[in-house]
View 1 (spheres, rainbow, N blue to C red):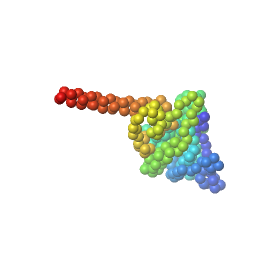
View 2: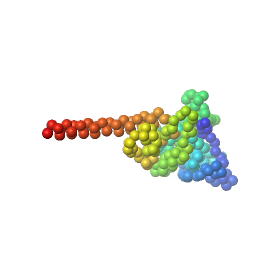
View 3: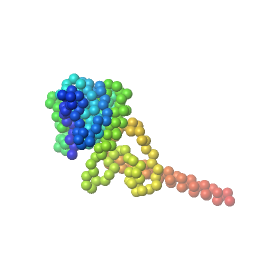
View 4: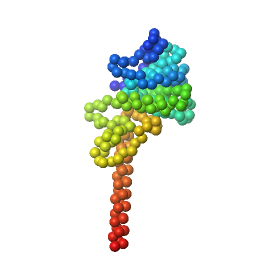
Length: 237
């Protein structure tokens, strides 16, 4: 199912304009961010280019080399996050992890060798960083990534349950909780989230279970306090 990272050179205006999108099937341009460099795998960052985020994919086109560009579908992005830690990467960036078909047949050592070789095999690239020249744009970019990722939910295969995202609606959480009357409090601002994943159902379930247990613990405390209060009144009588 995963397509992974791929080369992209389809530009309008005789190859000098914006990327050509699949508008016939509803793809729309959501955000354009100029002056963004990209780092593919373990390689050094490329020269500056323009980042195009659509309802289907993320596209980066070089400003200097009109024949250089990359694209990755949101369905192939397993995670994206804001990275500001200089120990993780020298420049603030949007860090992404990419699912590839090679994940099932290649090990990490082979992928690492591929990333460092002169001939870049995009089918084995699992990481990519987008580095805006203006780091103040990171939160905006992350929010757009989140919104467009939500437009491309992971297809649910037969026998799998729903709920594969870290971000849940209140209705989804109530369904997971078995319809209990529980009040849920979650931030509606995606920029407050350190990262976003389209998978990891086990983690999502663990978070949900923790929320449920916390609520039950609070209920138990209230019941215990009520019992103590009642006992105190009876003693005074």
